[in-house]
Image (cartoon, rainbow, N blue to C red; front, side):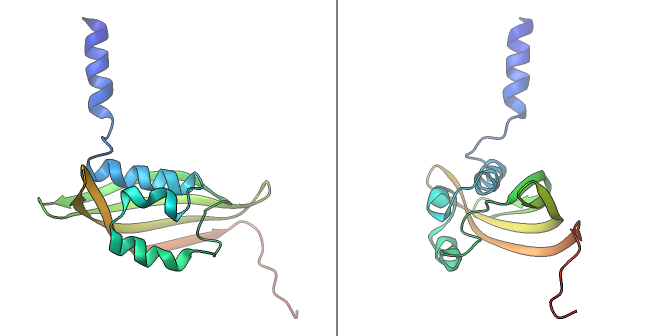
Length: 141
């Protein structure tokens, strides 16, 4: 009986990938794990995929030198046809083994129903804070 209760508690706390929160968290985790745009197509709408195509062939296609520190959902407002989730991410940009800077950013994701669950339709940046760990080298001085 004790094991059954523990099992139920454990799975009630885990976000389903089919929920809006689960879709967003999985998308963010995959991007920080180095997934490219083609690797996250199952989590985003066609219109958002089209806007992400601008990232192809840039350093932002895969987030290779960025390590996620924290992900937190601040608020959500959902209806049957749209869900807006405000969330916070902090991460560290590294050069080799050295930290270059730490970043904290607040974003709002708009999700729509699609397939078996939800798809990210748009992500807006609210604010970003960068804390430089290393000095910035300025040429010409």
